Amino acid sequence: MIGKQPFGATGQMSTRTIFGGFAFFQATQEDADRTLDLLLEYGVNHIDTAISYGNSEDLIGPWMDRHRQDFFLATKTDERSYKGAWQQMRRSLERLHVDHVDLIQLHNLVDRAEWDTAMAPGGALEAVIEAREQGLTRFIGVTGHGFSAPTMHRRSLERFDFDSVLFPYNYLLYRQPAYAASVDALLAACRERNVAVQTIKAMGARWWDVQPADCNTGYRPISEPADVARAANWVLAEPGVFLNTTGDLRVLPALFDAATRLTGRPSDDEMDEMVARLDMAPLWDPSTPL
Image 1: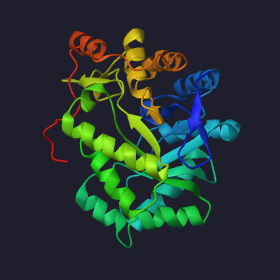
Image 2 (image 1 turned 180 degrees about the vertical axis):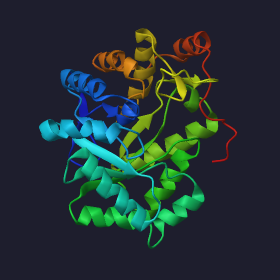
Image 3 (image 1 turned 60 degrees about the vertical axis):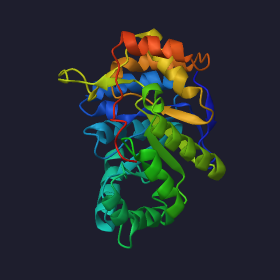
Image 4 (image 1 turned 180 degrees about the horizontal axis):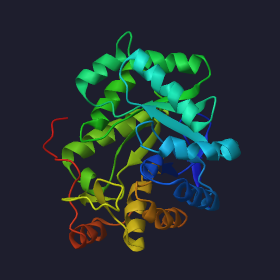
């Protein structure tokens, strides 16, 4: 079974690997039900999805009819206005077959103009706060993609007491000095405030030049079990962080297996060997302004 740790200050004990619902973007209910069996086998008790993840919420909904008590359930709104966020949240509850979620997150809030809209009066933040007051969610988080995500999350935490953050974190990204500094500053802020830290793109080897039809992710995933274990161990060696799983269902068994047998952070030499062998490249340009 995969080990658990506190999800920030929420009182929830979540498995260190969180199931990333993007994997169901184009999946079938049969695919989803096979995945549920895998989650139950490894004791994964936390699901993270979003209304923008294609079929995901619709495929998770039937699970909630039978297993709502087994999972901490999180979704996201990518609307920036009060009205738009409310409409998406109501739709998510319908699709998920629930009367509340445990965590609602402002999705990919890294663009500065969008941030200003979401945080202003009449913005999405007002909507999710009201949803919490009405019992439609218990907690509120913020997520982000790209090189500027950790910096923008620190800005978000200065504006509001979010319960969780989510951002990209892997060896190649962290090897960029500016990104490492922004991540370290965010981790320090989260430790001080007891904010849950979720990470994505642990299995991202490089962007596809041409994405294969049978691959759900825009990036080429690390897929061989030994390499999956190496990448997972690198992320999960950071105390307190969670690893949100890759969008490629084929990688899940190896990733869950690795999470049951953590061996500590691999050396830079070990990681560099994998980077060279797999022809890996950072998923975001390190010259992007923070």
